[in-house]
Length: 462
Image 1 (cartoon, one colour):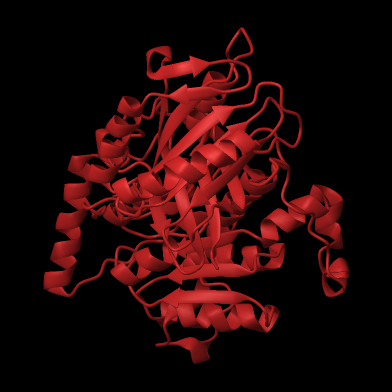
Image 2 (spheres, helix red, strand yellow):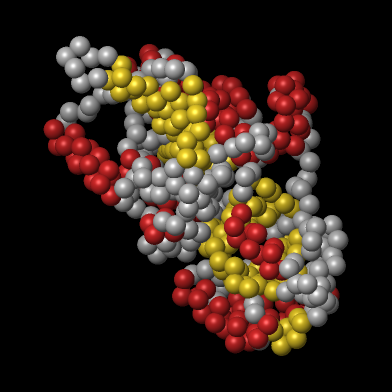
């Protein structure tokens, strides 16, 4: 049986919590939640993309120990879910609940009567419920294949860090016990981030889109960090020039798929490592299918249209994207010299600024790059750009550090504040924080945000 995970952006979770626990009289409050659906063999994910507080005029009665919702409100929200192919959930508060809030007997009886009807009206799409107290929460879901609710395994909030809570009592997930073979291997990590931090790294499923110089360096660092589950997507094969930039490659790897070379490299380090490979572009159906249930994706692709795709894909599936790039620019004079060496690391959260808002994926830039790609395809001439493994390694390490911050909360200053990203200057050897967009109001990414598999119009390269 696959795990059930409910995922909130920080904005959605804060909106829900403020409404449910903000009653000055200590009365219960309720809200409807509309969620995108991601259903894979591994997991059922419910992506909360809209919180609809239930106003008093739609509550037949309300007190500190219970409330009743008017059927008209439910009908209106269910119609929207049915039209968009979304899951429907109800959340309510127990204002005086403690650290381990649970559904009451009244909650159980009400759901047993109401939720089978909702399942039928919403064409069998998942239906869920959440109860929240000031110190904890519990969540469960009704599925058409089961005649009783099942607990949600994890409630996840995508904020400054990825917070993960036990869906049955609102506490932290069960402690990770460092297995005997791992005690020596990760002992230095545990001194820095604790056993729980190492557990969070271990249980995080990571995707890497593009495994050339930057992607291969990130892959190598991740497996040494303790990642056990990775998806690699890249259509290319290794040529001689890759050997100088791709970590872990040898001359015997020439003409082999990049993803397969890295998979074998990872298994030499850890025979238990799960490496899922896609020998195709990140926008292919196979890559989409395998990346849609990762927890974080590193975007290391070369082309701007593909970067824009990964950004929108992350918005659609509530997956944080760490966008990484490295570039050496040469002067235009006859005697060419290095003019600039730069690298960029951006943590793109589903409800934060995107590449469009940063001005890095405008229609004009996308069109220019697509025209250049078409010329190379027709002419058979592929332009090689300057690149060196030393600068690639620095930028890859910055990206992996941001991953550690995001998953474990190791560093208090991270790149998830609105509009902030990190730039590396290879000539001066410095790293600075830059501020770009200050909002997330993007009509391109916003239209896809949190839809999951519910979207009929799947994200495209433009």
